Length: 207
Image 1: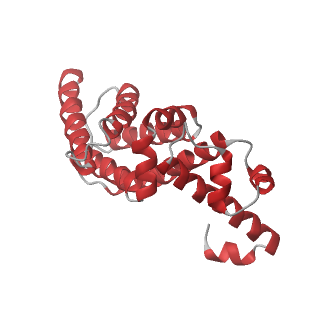
Image 2: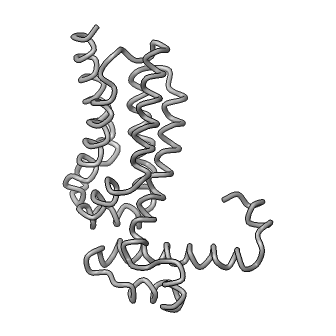
């Protein structure tokens, strides 16, 4: 939300926004440290310095908090992915910059990084069970089709490739997440190389 929008809000609305953000921040810390399975509403409330009653004014359970954190992350990824694809001037940049941009968003915040690392199964479930992933999929499909028409990318089965990219990204970035011998930047580069090479090979058979 822009600063000008916040200024125009009434005191009550600003308080609601602040309370909601406090609960989300508390939930992020709790899920990052305690873990999704062990976390309770009491843990989140203690971290937020709000009352249990205030918590229930905004969320019905811990799943709702976790879901909003994941959906918020995906929404930010959606923006940077679109920007990276829009600014790409080559096939390699179209793939590589998008993977790198999304990776930065996912892991630049230490608590979000730990949420993903320490809750990989729950994270996958909420990613693919939410609504935002469908818009990410649709955006990717639209942008890739446009890039093909512009001659930036070769022609290939776009819909299948998008399914593969989203699924592989979730698995590769979460795979062996606690082992930092392979950086997230290296994983992003691997994904880029994998799909650039694979799509070129497929395109040579299609065209």
